[in-house]
Length: 176
Image 1 (cartoon, rainbow, N blue to C red):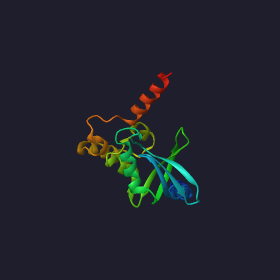
Image 2 (cartoon, rainbow, N blue to C red):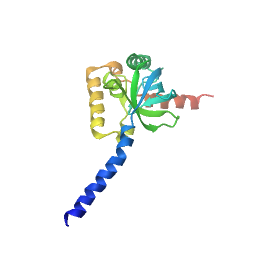
Image 3 (tube, rainbow, N blue to C red):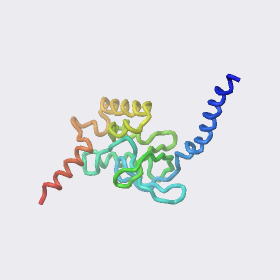
Image 4 (cartoon, rainbow, N blue to C red):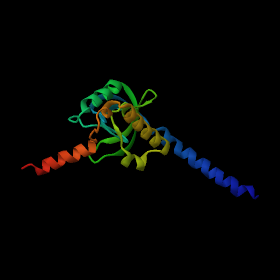
């Protein structure tokens, strides 16, 4: 009889796990990338035919008008444009874009942008939502891209996109 409470706990855990499995299984969706805006933003058409604007999670790529901005957009487009992808929405940003992790085939597209020197690992946001092992992979990929002087790291001191946006906002505020 002493085993009954012990088994009861396992039964509750197993039941809870079974109830949660359908939610986990539906987390990743399918879609086709139909437009790439920049190195971390794209449009895709999901399985229901809806067009969705997606911001790649946990990375920050140069803005189009920044050095390497167009090259990083073109790199992302070369990998994803008009291709089927899996995506998992993890948040929504202040501009209404869905923030998602994207995979094409078996490749993590977000990680690939960092590894190719086309994005910074967005550590500030990633620390809140990225699993620790994935966080470590992204941080290591950025460090390797810097060391290899890949993409934007070819420049001695590339300007981070958040610094660029801040500077542009300040210029707009200062202009009459």
